[in-house]
Length: 96
Image (cartoon, rainbow, N blue to C red; front, side, top):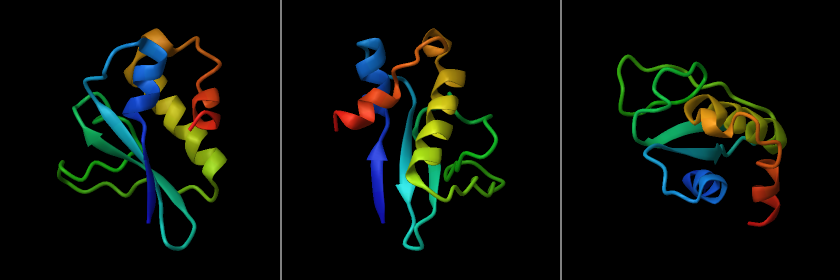
């Protein structure tokens, strides 16, 4: 399984370490999903895996990395409204 810590993306965009973070996770079968790593800002978003909250909610599985990145950015913009107008967040992935 492969994953990326997206708190770095938020830190890059805001110049501050975020209070909540996401992981972008690739499954063995090639599907992708977004999971809460820490904090509570993403707890109410549909489609996000929340391993520490019950009841369990099935995450939204995406078939490719680009769609997973776009969904993660949508989630980040919801949790961090200061980033809502940023159209350069995909650039962060290219710098990794």
